[in-house]
Amino acid sequence: MSTLGDRLREERERMGLNQTEFAKLAEGSRSAQASYERGEKIPGGGYLTAISSSGVDVLYVLTGQRTPRIGLLSADEEELILTYRKAPLAVKAAALAALTAGSATANSANITITGNGQRVAGRDYTENKK
Image (cartoon, rainbow, N blue to C red; front, side, top):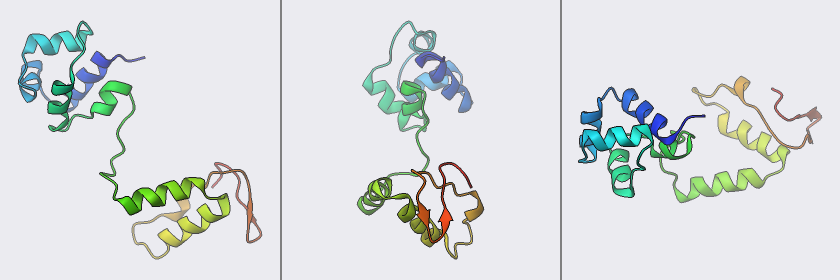
């Protein structure tokens, strides 16, 4: 299991920066950066905010889970997602079909419908089967 320091170093290396260059993103020192990466110190909010504005995935650094690369959600997009999550499997299947119909970039063969195994229009939709 990786540590906060491991993930911080991984992000620094992903950006192609040495410790001194990376520390400058947050107006810090190389020695402080080294202490963070060794796990001797935990970076504060000001540091994390500063490196975040430079493209560091701070959620990943803190939790080990990558931030989804979809950008900020508008209110209607958030409502759509919340409604979709609450919907029965049949509605999810219909919504995905409607949203991907006619889209040049959509590849409906790769869509996985998840849920509790309901039937829709004579077809069985089973969790995690394509």
